[in-house]
Length: 110
Image (cartoon, rainbow, N blue to C red; front, top):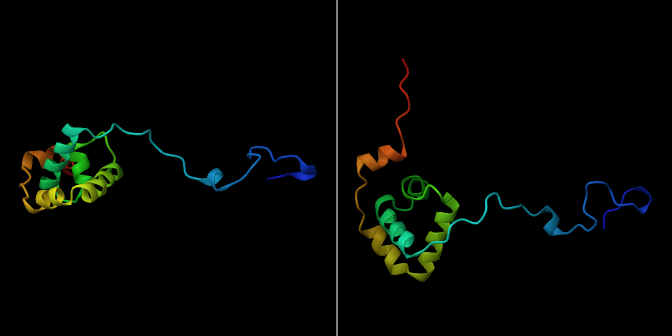
């Protein structure tokens, strides 16, 4: 219990203080759930980008965060380890056009 002078709660502070009081709040709302189609796209991207989740996010899942993609990878690694290994072992080269669309060239200096 947080009290100010005279046993009155301090202004701006909650009456009860616990570890939940100082817990970080989520920055964004819960994203779209992974369905079969996006999971297949995830494996296709994994075979192109490997475990570079930042590039995977920029190329294939701009609506998801890098952290969400990493969590998806860890979940799939536990549930379907052979499929993850197969996607990483049979890499597909990334087309230059795909790379340039995700990472546009910086403007050249005069």
